[in-house]
Length: 199
Image 1 (spheres, rainbow, N blue to C red):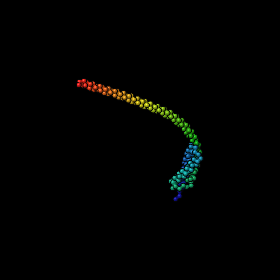
Image 2: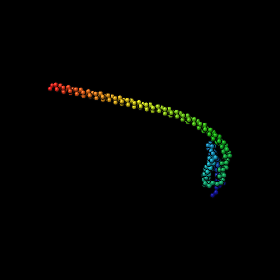
Image 3: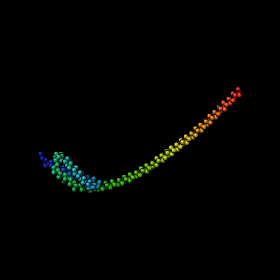
Image 4: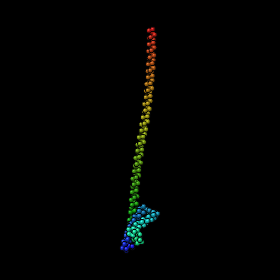
């Protein structure tokens, strides 16, 4: 069963609209290339990818109209719609995109410079802060080390005094013991002498 003339006319008109829509999408691709200043190899690759996607979308477009069969008049309608968009609104939009891309690049460059200045300022401030913190920590470390050294010296001095006191006390005790021993010896000698006299 063939397609009626009215249905083919409707498909053709829709293919014109679809071709114009593809032209608008291609303008977006062109705008991205302008913005990022794409090289020739990038332009070639993006064109190949775009037309491959267009082929898939054309097959999907023909699916509800003609059960997926792509007719020549559909391709012709898409091409006419695409060219009509490119030669009318597309040329104007190309200039708008080029102007917008220049403005956007200028804005991005100025914003990047401002961000770099802020980042450098913050980096310097952070570096100064870290340096001051390092100086403070180093000072605290030196104070702690000095305090520890003084504590060790005091402990060594106290230990030395304790040893001297113990030694002095030991000598005193020894003298005391010797004196007591001598006193006992004298006492026992005295007792023996008295006992001898009584006899």
